[in-house]
Image 1 (cartoon, rainbow, N blue to C red):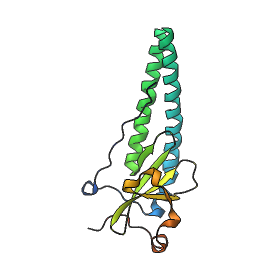
Image 2: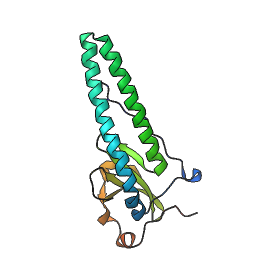
Image 3: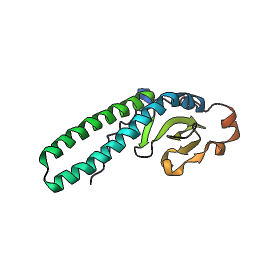
Image 4: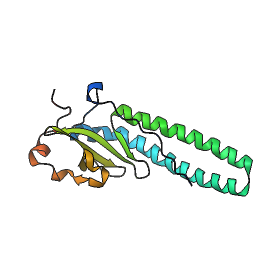
Length: 158
């Protein structure tokens, strides 16, 4: 069975107005991001369930049921794409559709980092270097003390 992977938009680069978040801004954005992610997780699971049913219908030669299920998958994928677009508008990057992980671009000590949040966490509790990805998630507490006491820059220096 082929697992659905919605296309992800690459957010615009710095020159195109890419948004960078302070830790406080990322946490405030969670009010909206949580709602979008709840819809993403629900619809993503429904796509996986429908794909399983489609496989069953196709193996059994149930063409009408397969066509109906394909239509439902298309509808769900279109909804997922609209949720993805909403996240891009907020400025966050979807990293894991099944686990509900998003990144908030940030700028620290002259380099870009990512604040990392997973659906169900109470707030933005992790961060990682750009090249580390979500597997390199570290506690916010590992940021230098001055970065925790003073907001991380919301934009790179000009």
